[in-house]
Length: 399
Image: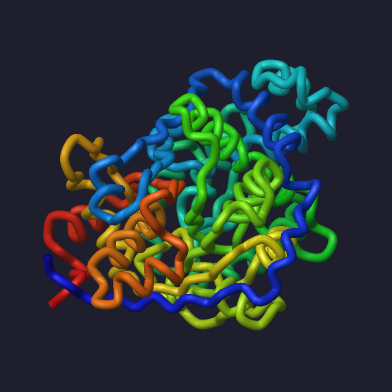
């Protein structure tokens, strides 16, 4: 077996208290899932039990929640965008969320509305999809360097898409300015002073996938995961999913690991400092969906109190995960995973091949009884780059 060492900086959380949040709980997740169940085309995405990979890594189970199958949009993000827009419209027009349908809202809306957002790709696609369903317009801003294919996905849903010459966080500020000037409704998955309701709904919407995953693993005879690996940009997905899991099982009964690219590791740095730390610059990482330098202040308190460890890793870890999932061992199913979706699986493979494997396994709490939940948040949302990594060997694990 070959050995190689990929950069994975691990920080144990010295600020762990186990304190949960009523905003991100099982009750709120089940409300969101009840809403999603009413949407045409809804079905739970697969939870794939990678038995051969688990045996290879040295754990009991590796369970991959495959969000590439979500509503034909190749990513999980629409769960948050559509739930937030539905709640916003229901609040505006006095409709109970339990009664929401796209047809009802289209008949109820009395004036044109524009929804604006910033995205690295998947969130904007979800907002554009939701706006189209209710017959309204979306304007989506993207940071510099955004892939043409991700832009086209948004344009094909009838939205306007503008690629800026700024990084993600500065593009968010531009979106805020334009929306205020033009009377648009911002649908953003991070929060700031005076803007919390919509990002709360978005995070609650994301937790649908966690409720599905727990139901699916219990149907397999697995009562709960021992570990969860959660990738993070601003931390909205990580906060929403972790909030649900610790409410179900208790924070002290779950080894939770938040993973970020080392070029955009604001939560890793925040975890070390015990307070929110921003990262600036271009944040050049292949994990475009995680290229965010400012933590979501709504999710941060829960992540601070309930995350076991924070990890900052090299892009090669993500690329390794893409290849591992796309070229499975034994009878494991093949999973198409994009750069932001694969990093958790890549971390497991990188630990397996590391010269200090045993020490890393011990530090991360992995053993033959570990049940590891991983979220594949996206498929090949940039097909050209996916092929460069998986076919052509871009970002090799060892050179």
